[in-house]
Length: 207
Image (cartoon, rainbow, N blue to C red; front, side):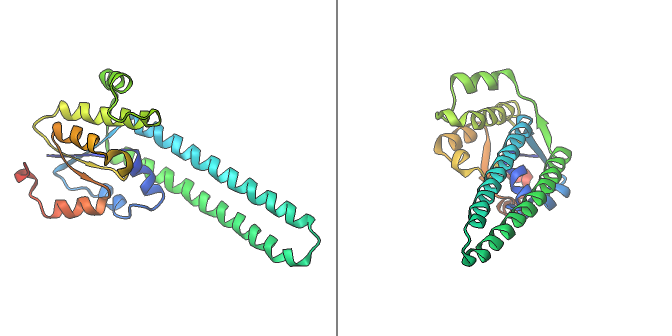
């Protein structure tokens, strides 16, 4: 049995259409794999969703301000600009409404098809006292990483890989070294690459 660890990035990538192969892979996964996600990733996904909401509101407010300012100007040449801004506002609304539905679908799909890893106390302690990623803003990534490492340590005989589009953090040398030390033999940034590897490997023969 192959363990495939995923994290928050998969939920957001599905919701934003950034990993086209992921939905079908989750809907019809191979029988000899087990998908795992730290349970705290659902909370982080909600935070990411809220950030998208804030970004949308800021963008809308900026457009509304520009429309108001343009309408105060009596120059007829600004008429087309106002029309373009109003179209942009409508397009923004439509895109975010689509994203809301896709986010709900994504988080439901992952919750249905991926097994959650509960947060152990030692993962929380390690995150606060000896984080692998040292920057303060990386606290949540550290907690997710520690949760995965703790689970990997408790399953030393299983073949394990990580799927995460968060290359900026999980692609760091210190993170990759920590993963390999606990038997997580491969790291994939997207589902397509993972599927390519799975198609060329007999899982029972992987060392």
